[in-house]
Length: 132
Image (cartoon, rainbow, N blue to C red; front, side, top):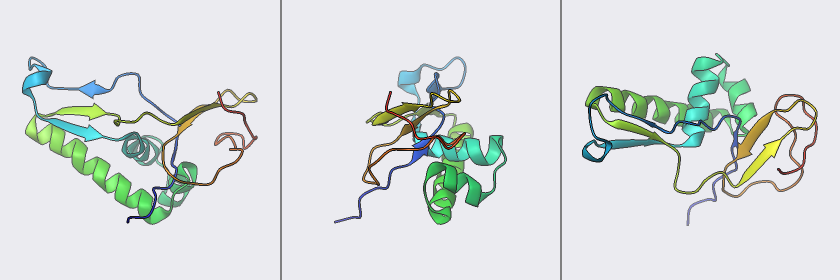
């Protein structure tokens, strides 16, 4: 039996979840699925420009897990672009918990899976928060 999946902190959940080539029907296109944690790894590394250690810390995962997640995400995005496939962001099961910091207003989600239970802290200001 595989080890239970560790919880991952995702600070950004997109409003738009499907990207496809113009003029093509979604039903006729192959689909490439990008999970929320893969999108978060792309965002932290490529948009925010964070180093692996800092990005991994923000997602509450190890550096090696972060690197594997980032590599998978980059491969999937490249595959969708090269093959003309639709890129679908999400997963079958939505984030299990949504959080919002009352102090700074930051919002994030913790994805399903086994992990440490307890009071989370805000990834922006470090204050303990309550579930939304």
